[in-house]
Amino acid sequence: MAKEPVRVLVTGAAGASFSGQIGYALVPMIARGVMLGADQPVILHMLDIPPAAEALNGVKMELVDAAFPLLKGVVATTDAVEACTGVNVAVMVGGFPRKEGMERKDVMSKNVSIYKAQASALEKHAAANCKVLVVANPANTNALILKEFAPSIPDKNISCLTRLDHNRALGQISERLNVQVSDVKNVIIWGNHSSSQYPDVNHATVKTPAGEKPVRELVANDECSGAAIIKARKLSSALSAASSACDHIRDWVLGTPEGTWVSMGVYSDGSYNVPAGLIYSFPVTCKNGEWCIVQGLPIDEFSRKKMDATAEELSEEKALAYSCLS
Ligand SMILES: NC(=O)C1=CN([C@@H]2O[C@H](COP(=O)(O)OP(=O)(O)OC[C@H]3O[C@@H](n4cnc5c(N)ncnc54)[C@H](O)[C@@H]3O)[C@@H](O)[C@H]2O)C=CC1
Ligand SMILES: O=C([O-])CC(=O)C(=O)O
Image 1 (cartoon, rainbow, N blue to C red):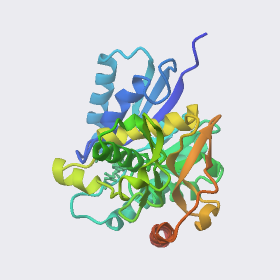
Image 2: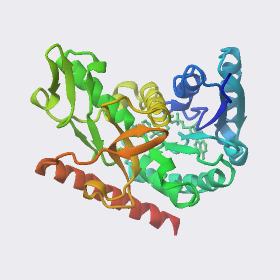
Image 3: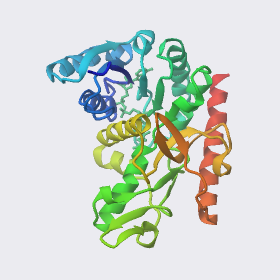
Image 4: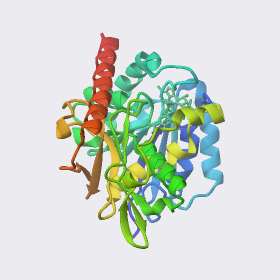
């Protein structure tokens, strides 16, 4: 029997300020089954702001023209209530993006007010058990604000995207070692989706004909390359961010492969002595639609310092965000 359609919200779907256009790259991936599976029909809900209404309608027309067999309907709107009504998955891309040379903190106050308002719309109108992924920067703190203003959505259902950083680390290791990216696994992104994040390869492995080898012996810890993309494209990452958002939701809903973990920004429960009450990126495995932090990994002194530094930045962002609320 055919499955019931899943309603997926994408905010910022018009990609209309032409910063990087994640939404425009993301919606056809969802309509093709990249996010939820090749047998899962979807109804897309797309939200953007009134100045982007015409562009948003253009995206809707393209989705119709592309005749995606899995796409059972499109809601394109500038009304947050209409956009959020009945959604099972919400991917929050809309926001005020950072541009070349801009600090993330410059855009905090604009995003705090956006996320406060959209949290209320989601809380009141989304389907029960809606899973939320915040992509827009500052992603961890936007997710925290969303959590704060949608208290009836369980903590476990609110996350932010660090999968792009995770995938970047996998990609860079595969380039350096000249191996297939699918043979590399279990890197970890700890902390914030910012330059303070700690990409940790201490537990990563690469598949070789002689079995799995630790990556640590082969490469040093890595840097995130978001700024390099902005420099090269004059636009921030879009297709890789969209693809990583699909990976994040797919693994969350359908499960991570046996023996593999991924990085997700989730509400800290104090694991690894990360302060509770932050949205912090951890290694997680997913099963039956629930994520679970991988426990018991040994943490050396270098890693501890890096993990604490990014937690410290998140605590500062949290304080700044709360000061924007008053
Ligand atoms: N977490 C991650 O790994 C990454 C996060 N990002 C962040 O994702 C966000 C989106 O990036 P791009 O697609 O490049 O930006 P973009 O500027 O191309 O698109 C943003 C869209 O959001 C819309 N928007 C603004 N306020 C809105 C609101 N209140 N409600 C609904 N829509 C709204 C804009 O009209 C625009 O269409 C940015 O904050 C960017 O910094 C970008 C790359 C990676
Ligand atoms: O800073 C930005 O807007 C882009 C970003 O998050 C990334 O590429 O990781």
